[in-house]
Image (cartoon, rainbow, N blue to C red):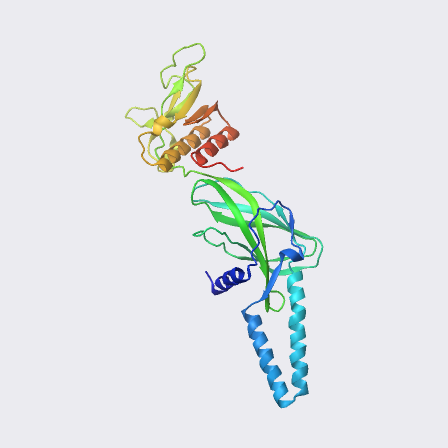
Length: 333
């Protein structure tokens, strides 16, 4: 944390300038009531220099000293208006964000719309989370031309599964003279889903349910429907080897197929009951969902208090991953 950030945090606590935290529905326009402005370190130093110049001018009755002192003071005073106007009436609108896995970086996209004023220079865009322990985002410096609408992508590292919120954004500027710091807070009601990290054994559990006629499934390997993996054994046909897994150094795996009796495949909580840690159980199920989806298998997910019927496709995969991501967590409205 920089000295500037510490100084501003102490200043906000003392002056109680921080507004009450309420998520705002986008778009949001930065009005005068939403913009705060204070002298920064350079501004205080500049004021000290002006004070010394004024004392010297009074002491020596130097009229040119008076002129220069008040001229510089007027320039600094006018610069406060330009600093505030560099943020005034900017519109922030909602963009998009895609789900990610634990350990990946979510890319939150917002739009800045500059419709009503000329160019904006040296705008600083930064995520400033309020929760203790969260890392402050890296600031981005941007310029916006007149009547321009640009997309700003804010990266946030997904450290745990569940919902990841963008939380609070600080947009600030010191333009034009660097003597004053103007800023505004934007509490964004924007989140994404963080799936468990897909780790564990790649071998899918062998299991299915018979068709509606009650027929027993054919022996694994006699049909055309993919039902899982097993380890390679001497004498296995090369055409059943998952060569993609071999190329990725995942080991020698044999694709197993079943007949019409295997109408669907279940990924059950009981399949990972031997794993102690909850997160490792969810990670294993997450990996199996991705493998089953990549093979085009029809599969269902059976968790405690959550059961997703067998299906396939991207929407079904996302529903299963979301159920794993939110398993055991409090639900948000």
